[in-house]
Image 1: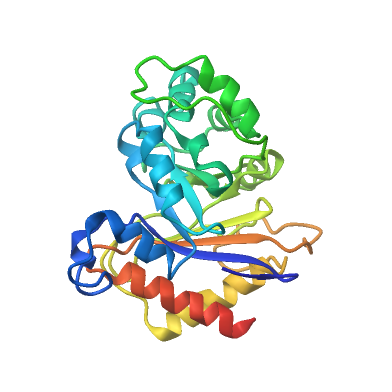
Image 2: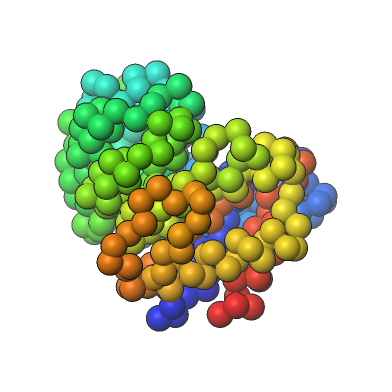
Length: 295
């Protein structure tokens, strides 16, 4: 973690259980159960991917929290049942079950919840607006919603140790989101529009829509597979430090430049998802170092 009055930057990976990292990032002989502990000694954030596929257990969240340092943060990926199957419609019960599945057991290590939309879900102001308005903005509100929907949750957690703000990020994958209306809606809801680098597979937007900037690097040349060279990482380090300092640089990926320009320092989270060839953890460490060198 690098953070001063110039904002806070966290860098991590999307998941941490990959066998292909053994011997290249994880030392040979390292027990599978200690992989998160090892990663958290070198990085300060990780995305929880399993929550996208199925409800997890509160005991798992507690184990992950116990294995990591005090300043580590987990971003939790929202359920694909909500985002991909129901496409955000009629999801109050499913949202309650998702929140009951154990997120709150992370306590202060709970970072933002990431909602990744499918490529075939286009911009729909009513649909997106209703869903974002439904999301609880504090852990206390999340616990209350979770308590009403514990059915079919294997090991629910419906309490919070402290009432903290909850933050959200939205990763869109349809070009119809390239409209100022989408940016303005996310700004009104204080939800981060994910900056997604995906080898041109999905659109990339870099508008700042909240006090959080959320970046997912899936591989610039080949989706999920290619690594980032030193020049590319230095370019991302420059962007990350600018966002953290409160700047909002305008590029060809900017839909609706903010006005007036924000000046308050921000939190920036960057996650590498180019894990297929084992690049993610190495690129994450290199970016962390490049950001630190600029600060």
